[in-house]
Length: 80
Picture (cartoon, rainbow, N blue to C red):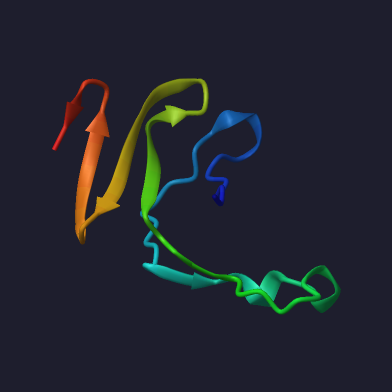
C-alpha cells in the first residue's frame, strides 16, 4: 500500500488530475542495503481510494478495485 499525499499545508487540496500507471517500479527509491536479498520492488495497481471535496476536513471517499480486468467503484452501499 502506498499513500500519495494530495493535501498541502492547512488542509487545502492540490488541484488537478492524477494519472497512475498499472505497474510501478519502486526500486529507484530503495537503497541496496535495505534490500539485501534482491527482492522485487515492482508493484501492480489493484485499488485506489479517491477523496472528493475541497479540503481534508470535509468531503467523501470512494474506493475503486480491480477484479478480473474490470474496475469496480464502491461508494457507501453502492457499487458499480
